Image 1 (spheres, rainbow, N blue to C red):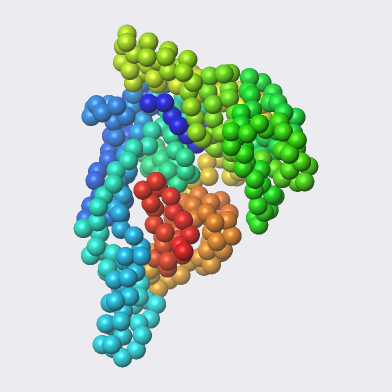
Image 2: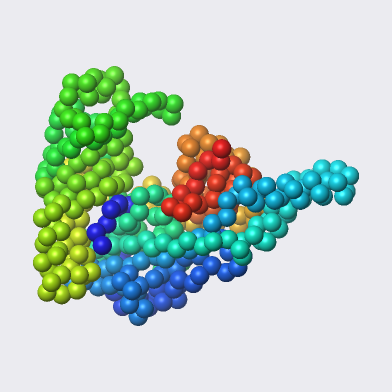
Length: 387
């Protein structure tokens, strides 16, 4: 049960004991999608025991979020809605207005959802109360968004901050590539991505290629910066670090897997894997922070949203209009511009750029889905710009 990807957060205030956390999570247990719901999510037992929502292995905690999604492409809904729109135009003698088109879209969606197939997945979350880490095993920020949203509903508040270091990962990785070495117990592997600074720039990718080659330094000297870099920590864990501080393609090397197998023979395999993984990842994250110049101060002024949880809504946040209603959100056009310019239809991205609450950002993304600007969440929990 070793994690393959890490979306990393810092615990800035206690989440409570394992027993307290389990009691709070019990109210948010997973329930399948209702007939008219596109998605459902809730807490599930990490290792299958229905009475164990929190696994506690030597003070290290594991929880899991179950997600069920209806597979109903927007293109299918739009096709049926367009057929209905033609029938309505013929009946009333003029083309339907925008409000009528949205009503048709919603009506078709409500009719098709009960017949849509449902896909379930589980997202695992490791909590290290001792060292103050919370890590989501997810390659995409969309899945991390789901976990953060559910944690906020469960806890009432979210004592988390993004893992943020003094030196930006992109700047540090570029320097490491230029020097051919990394400070601390890290080594450079043979994969990296170099990109031109700016939104319209190209990129160069190296796969299983020596990165101390002269051509790599030539790209750096021409202004390219590192967006991704494959690394190994302490000859025990290999991974890819991104400029957004995401840790991907995590691979625990054979020596650790053999150690886990030996411990599993004397006890529970799940807890053996979990204990080894937690110990190693805590060391990796601590070493990574040190190599990046240390972490930022996680006790900022409450108004400093840059180092606080990016998904915490402001108390004065207005109630967002319902998607498809006549009332338009005044920030809708700005949100569409952000999504199109970045190419990333992410709720947290819109929230961050516009400095609005999570619910409002989610409503804006939903409206873009209705308008055909972005796709619904796919099976991996990812939205994309519509073709």
